[in-house]
Every structure is written in structure tokens, then in C-alpha cells.
Image 1 (cartoon, rainbow, N blue to C red):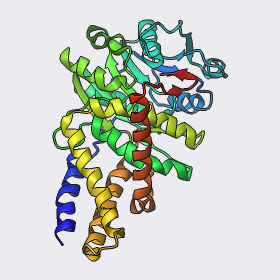
Image 2 (image 1 turned 90 degrees about the vertical axis):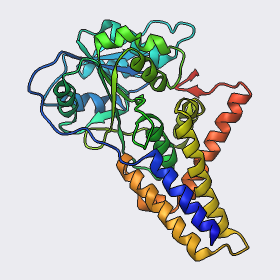
Image 3 (image 1 turned 180 degrees about the vertical axis):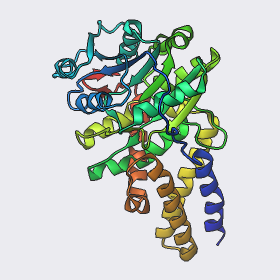
Image 4 (image 1 turned 90 degrees about the horizontal axis):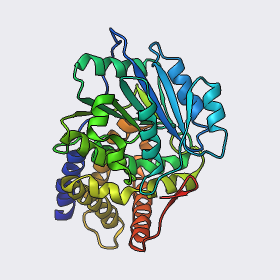
Length: 357
């Protein structure tokens, strides 16, 4: 009985230290207008852009401009963006030492007309009233140094997407400040910031070569005096990340999660290791030939599954069955993480959207 008690004593608190509650952007309508430029870096995003641009166009409060930075797409990204009313900026050639996304965001900020900048990934979209809610919160705070970031609620249609559960949880834990100690570190999918604050801190130029630019940018902004706030996107900003299949999903998660683990901070990393150890140990002891107290272990397994369900439903449309069968998404996470670590050790680069990173 010692093993189950120890697993429960370590695993459940470690999980709750990573995520206690995912705060949501409060409802509201702006009581004044703001000059906002929406900046969307886009590389081969012809499938995603229509949904995002339509959600912005349907908003009760429209931004001053929507600027799509076309990062040398080989599909109809630019034509679709132009047809749907966006201003299209063709990215200049990628300079040495820059990632494609940071270079696109940097150019977008330089050409933006608005006093406020809202950076969005192309696979995100606002639910009705979502954009007005975000703008209302920023204006209500009356703090020109405020930097706001939302982790989009992960909408999933295909069964394979459910395997993202552990990745999604660690993304929220490492960047959102939703746990016990860790401070907000910003999410890469959205960034709402004053133009002056952005350029004073150095903007994306300060993190030009970093794949997960959001984590490093958070430190840069905080050092310049910015105040960072993160929210979950449920009911405000949603996303469909991997409509193109299992391989797209695996390539996306593999591209930078080693760096993300390093940049998340020692406390988050230690808690994650303890939590993963408890999750795996519970499964292995349950199936071990020797009886380690299976009834008690089954209770621990159920408690850990329910903890995962509590976290998962705040972050995406994860099913209870996915959480009850958590060894599957956990094995997927460990496989992708391990493969990424091996590639990094061998100095091999990953490929994302036809470009080595």
C-alpha cells in the first residue's frame, strides 16, 4: 500500500502545482475606440486564414487594419487574404539568424498603422464577441505597459488530435502562469501589446533566432517594465491546429518542445518530471506481475485520469475517454519528446512548412 499512497502524494500535487485554474478573459464591451493593427504571419495558410479573417470581419468592433505578412507561401495565402479584405505584405528575404515567424512579425509591426498591435497565428479564430472582449479588457486596465496573451482553446475533430493532451497541458503550464509559482510567460499564438512598449523592448528582433519566441520575449518585455497577463482562450479565441493529419501534428510538436522545457523554468520542469513519473509508475505497477495493491492503484489511476480531465476540458475539446486512457497520449508525448531530443543531440534540424528550423 506504500507505493499507491506515495504516487498519489507526489503525482496529484505535482499536477496541481503546474495548473490550478486556467483564468479566462472576462466579458465586456469596449466603451471607447482604439486604433488596432491585427498582424498575422502566414506561410501556406490558405486553409486557415478564411476562418480567422471571417471571425474578425464579423466582430462588433473592427480593428483599424488587418495585416497579413505572407512568408513566401507556395499556395493561395496572399490571394485569399487580399480577397477577404486584409492588407497583404510580402515578406522580404529571410535574413540569417532569424526564424520565419519572428521576421514576419517584425515586418508587420514596422508597417502597422495602429497604436496597438494584436499578433495572431493563422490557425486561430475568434468566437462571437471574442475580439471585443479582449479589446475591452485591455482598455479597461488603462495600463499602456500591459501585455496580454491568450492560449487558444484547442478545438479537435479527428481522433488523432486527442493525442495532443499532454503537450497542450505542458504548453499551458510552461507559459501561462496558471500554477502555484510560475509567472506568465506568454503564448506564441496571440500577443496584444502597445506599439511603444513593443519597440522599446526590441520586439521580435530581440528574439530573432528563437523558435519558441514567446517564452524569451516574455523575459525581454518584463525586463523593460511590461506587465504580463495570460488567459485561457475558451469562449474568446479558439484554434484548430492540425487539420492536415497525424504527421503535421507530430512535426509541429517536435519542432521546439526541448527548448520549451528548458525555458519554462526549473520549478515547472521539476514538477513536470514528478508528475510524468507518477503517471507512468501508476500504469506500470498496475500491470506488473507482482501485486502492489491493485485496488488502491486503480483508485490512484482514476484520480490521475480525473485530474487530467479537469485540466483538459479547460484547454480544449478533450474527451473523458482520452483522459481515462491517458497512457496513449502520454506515450505519444514521450516518443515525440525523445525523438526531438535525439535529433537535437545529433544536430539534425526539423522541417516545418518546407523550411528547416
